[in-house]
Length: 298
Image 1 (spheres, helix red, strand yellow):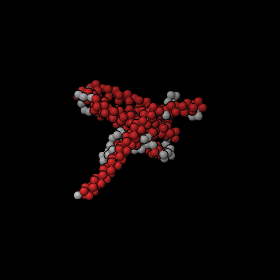
Image 2 (cartoon, one colour):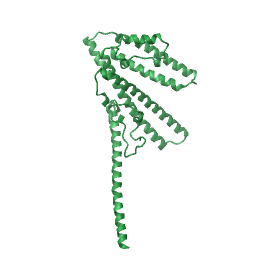
Image 3 (spheres, one colour):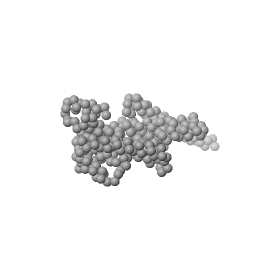
Image 4 (cartoon, one colour):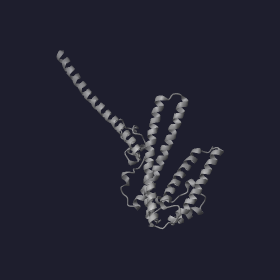
């Protein structure tokens, strides 16, 4: 998506279709950088919450350095934002006059977070829409890949690892993958909320077919069961059936292969259960026939 937007910006510059407000930053780059800053804010917030109250001086110093760097990037980005979105200056003035806000909580006022009363160029909504859709697909891809790695590590640990040291390292690896899955889940929800806000403004009504609401129960591997489900009644989460499950041809082949394997397992179970039903009926028929023979013998 970013390559497509870069080519579109190049075409606009070469043909001189629109005036250039900044020498280095185009509107698509502005929105893309804003989404990256939003992601950095989430990471910083999670890291600060995970440290707790008893962090060391080194940890606190690193967090403060990250916060200062993020604040500097937000200030630089906000100056360029006013060129393309001058109406944001009114909203930003209210926050600038208030008390100091931590950089991880500072509002960026991206197009998806603006109300209908704030007017901006329609192309910014289009850029935001394309980037948010790509972000949602990437998040789905990251979730699916993380779930595959999570399932593989658990099976590998149970089958091959013994001893406290090996199991501790394995659990640390599993916890790291689970943290990445949770981060991708949060990233998808943020993109989904932005898509909900932008869709009415660009008259897009078909987005719900591809981007569904992602609940906690939806983030599960193909073999996981929900409460009350059995092997015969379970259903695969929708994340494995969507476009975001594979972002390249190689990933597509891997995802399709996983779906084929799961389908073959389900087919094998269905055929085995059907065979068991036939065997049970034949067994009952023979029992009745034997009892009739015993009755005739008596």
